[in-house]
Amino acid sequence: MNTKVKEAVKCWASSPTWFSRHPMDTAEFRRAVSNLKRITPTPSFEEIKEAIMFFVSDAPTMLGTPSDIPQAVHDFAGKIYNKL
Image 1: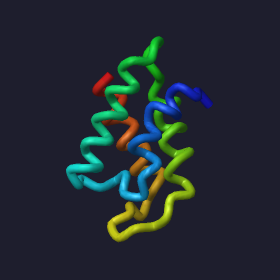
Image 2 (image 1 turned 30 degrees about the vertical axis):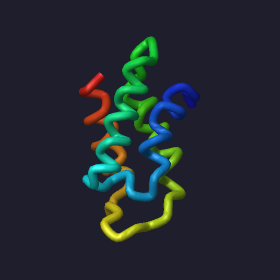
Image 3 (image 1 turned 60 degrees about the horizontal axis):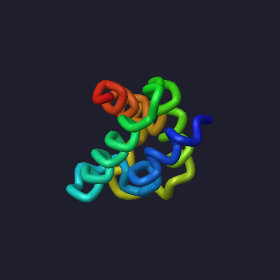
C-alpha cells in the first residue's frame, strides 16, 4: 500500500463518520483531497480506494453507515480521483 496516499486520506477516512455530509466531515474530505493533490505522481484510483478501505473496514458502525461499504468506498474513491 502506498503510505503517502494512506497518510493523505487518514484525516478523513479514519473518522467513523467518513460517509457523512456533516460540515466537519466535508471539511476533512476536502483536506484529504488537498493532501492527495500534493503527491506526485498522482495517486491511482486503486491506490486511493485501497487507502480508504484500510481505514473504514474496521470503523465502528454509526447511524447512517452505508450498508455496502465496498461500494461506498468505490464511489468516494471515484469522487476523489476526479478532483485530482
